[in-house]
Each structure stands twice: as structure tokens, then as C-alpha cells.
Image (cartoon, rainbow, N blue to C red; front, top):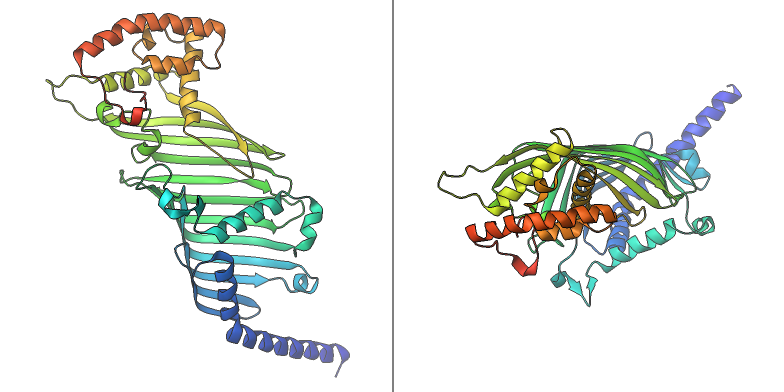
Length: 414
């Protein structure tokens, strides 16, 4: 028998023996060890229906459940053999099918102990991860390099519950999530990771669904990124709790509002700038009986829509910029509120709209507009106040003042 045949047979026998040993270890102890490690790290109960190996060398996990956090039907993990021999953890491919993730942000006071979340271990783990990602290159020597060449998530669901905005919380669900990630490094040296995501959003108040698309690249080590985010078919009524302190939805009689959102995101040295555009594509007011007077809130809503149509040649479009940190991204509805004020202020200064066009807006609105504007623009706005005061006084005599809860001024109240 030729030498190469003997060598091949020997390699196959060694591989078979190695596979058998690993298979037995995984079948006997693998599930127990994985459950123990996950429960220790997350401080949550973990269940795994099945864990085993399949040929040629892939790890299967079925029915993974982390209590209150995630349920995954099936995971297929294919390691890179030569990577393992080199001391690196290299995974050629991870396929995740039908995961459902429940993520709660802004925990209410009754979920905290001495001001800290009950999920202390999760909070600590996230803090440690952020610290590691922000550490100098030398810090990574403590950790094995984990490289995921390709990650794919199919038919995923994300239930995001924001309890900071109200006692009952605002729930937003993303379904049919499809994610592709290439060249992902955990605890990396400098590496560019490419990603793409698509999903649908079923709204609670609207039968039609929103569509989410994002793609781009990110370098976690250098804290750089470039991405495009598009969300079409946003139901403005479902998101009302976020802007309730500015808008009196009931008295403005807005029944339907659909929007599109687009953002081009650039990140460098942890500084992120997102150039955003918000478009109102459809708005409908509730019908009003002939003998029912028009409320101030409805008049103001109609006036603002008219102003934006005049500014943007019939379209209702708002452009604004968000500046934040890559390792601690933050966004506030105040960004949109300020952009509305600045857009109208610039339009007055450039004579796109007239002073009398904005006279119906509340005085509180003008006070916000004067922040960050030029002295000339402030003078124009102050001039508009004198015109608007008589109109607002007249409106006060027609109707009772709009009630304001908790002392908060609303944009559509006086």
C-alpha cells in the first residue's frame, strides 16, 4: 500500500476517534456545562432542549430558552478546525433560526433595589464589555480572539418595551428579522464588520406594517462606522407617548399619521453624527360635526402643517442632525422638537413664510425658537409675538384653555 494511502487512512481513523470522543463528551456533559455557564453569567434560568454534534463537525442547539430574555428554536455552529489548533476561536458560520428576544429598557422604580437593577450581573457584564472595548490594545491579550466569519439570523422577533416613557410601557415589535453579519471580531484588534438587517414592524394602532432596513460597516476597536437606516411606514399614533408633552392629540383631532425616517450615520473616534430626515407621508383628521367649534389644538396643527408645506414646496419634511457617542448612543425626541423650531425660524429669516403665518403658534413655542438663532431672527420672532398675542387673546375668549397635566406645556395648548 502506498504511503499516501496509509497516511490518509491514519488521518481518517484519528479524526473518527477524535470526533467520537468529542461527541461523547458533548452528549454527556456538554448541555449541562453550557447551561451552568449561561446561568452563572446571566443570573437567569436557562433550558436547552438538545445539544449535540453533527457531521462533519458542527454543533447543534435546539430549543434554547433564557428566562424572560430569549427563546431560540435552532442554532447551527460550524467551527474552523485550523483556527482551534492555532489557539484562536474561529467560527466559520453561525446560523440562528427563529429567535425571539424580549428587551426592556428604562426599568421602573419598583424593579430596582437601592437604585440598582435586579439584573445586576447583566448590568455588570455589559459595563465590563464596554470597558474592554474601550481599552488599549494590550488589554485584549487577556482574552482569546473570537472571530465569527459569518452570522445569519432568520425569522427573528424583537419585543422592545420602553418603561421609562410611561407606567404601562411602550411596546415596539420587530418581526421577520433577517440579519447578515460578516467578519465579526469579539474582543478584536482592528477589523471591519459588515452588516445588513431587514425587518417588519406591526403597529398596535394601524393594520399596515412598517419596514426597517439598515446596512453598513463598523469597527468596534477603532470606534468607527458608516451606516444607512431606513424606516418606512411609521405609525405616529402608536408612538404618541414619546411626544405627548408637545402635542394634544385628542383635541388636535389627528386620527392617522404615517411617516418615513432616513438616516446616514458616520462615526469616527467614538463621535457619531447622524444626518436624519423625517417625512410625513399621510395625515388624516377625525371628522367634526358642523356645530362643533374647531379647537385651538386643531388650528395650530393645521397651521404648522401649512407652514412646512410652504417651506418644502408642498412636502412635509424635517431635516435634523443627531450627535452622540458610539459606545453610549443616545437619542431624544427633543432633537425633533428643536429641529421644528429651527426650521420655522430659518424660514422666517429667509422670507419663505411671513410673520403673520406663524402668529397663531403659542408664545412658548417662540421662546424655544429664539435659542441659538441670530439677533436678526430673534427680532423677527419678537415682532411676530405682538401680532400673535391679539389672535391668541381672541382664541381664549372663544374656548376654555386646554388642560395641561403635571405642569407640562404642550405645543398644541396655549
